[in-house]
Length: 235
Picture (cartoon, rainbow, N blue to C red):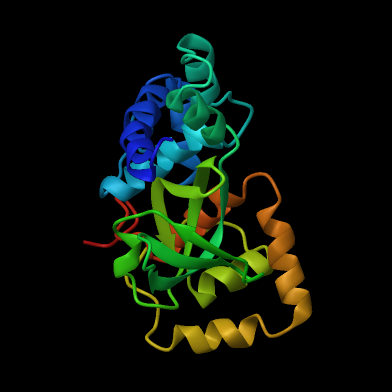
């Protein structure tokens, strides 16, 4: 049986191959939606900003563009039943959502729970375990086996400001971006914001809607949770 480590080793080459099949027109639209396009090219300030542009283009594009992962599946279908085939099929249904991290799991990876439903899961990821318990993140998960859950390479920290904007349908901003982490006591603000059942139901519904990942990414960028933005962060 294929292990989580073996699937993890296959994931990066497969996503890289799929990213090369994203047309420039789609890449431009994803970057424009995230305010990371200067009219000619993607202008990320770091690797994570670059990664979320391709995350959308490969797995969840804004607009009517086809997905890079589907192009990859048609162009280079792996042998049926192989680990590559299982991973490819899982990536085609990979889901983006919000999750609370609860520290390292004794079996490896990190203990996590869906947010706000609290459904427990274990994510095999060598970096997430270092996050302080209680950290709220947005990420896309892929499950090539029922007992193996991996990320798709992008992780965005989520705070109460981001949640409030999602719940209130606040449109994207175009003003200056001032980088900074969530407030030290943000967990209290999140708990207060999500205390109402209506807020939890609303957030759960939003996560099922198309384009949720793009909304989270753009809001995180506007709030400075993804660092400085070229052309928007004052020198």
